[in-house]
Image (cartoon, rainbow, N blue to C red):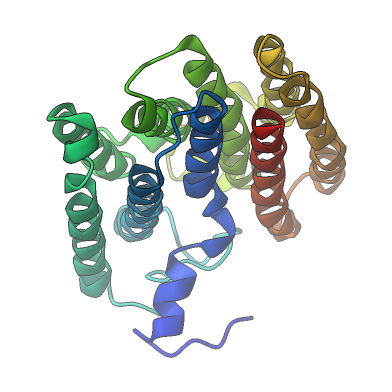
Length: 295
């Protein structure tokens, strides 16, 4: 149990949910490796994308923390890791201000991408910011209507990978979209673990995740097949590098081990340990695909 002083740096650090930040960094790693494979790697836009992606994810985490608390989703029955606002670590008003500050920082770094990608990047950045807030806020929050998985696949998969590649190579090849799907499926599994754990409390609070809508089996097998499909998609890289095809299949070892634990534990707070393991697995997948592309 964390001992946290109210509004302290430790409270804010925990609110970023550091164990999940692989979802923001892995897309940039994979996209940059793909760009390097084609001889187009550029350090500055890659770093700007990394900072923007991490700040956007942290802003999303802060926003979710605040709006889930306001909607009553996070209460004394919460099974997941402690939330900063619900636990009293950070005042709701401070969390709202913190969300706005991190969004502003993300936009500030994002402005640097205009030099590399043109005015299109303003539109992309605006869509990202609006979507991350709309995930749990507004009159029709995406996460409460079965669209959380789609959100993660699109923004932590396709958008993050494809546009990081575009900013370095100035093109939109099919393989960038394939890489986006590979990473996105791995990132969706982080959400699947959360929603699998919270399926009963989400149902009571009228948060209609896909696992609430389609049942426990959907979460269990969806998690499993997301990892399988991510590896199978790497077959598309066969003409570029045999290593980019073969190495990602090593990811299935930790993936299946984590899935077996998920099935065995089934419910309760014991599933929380699998959040970090799933994030680690995503990092392993990203590293293996990146190494394969660089080889």
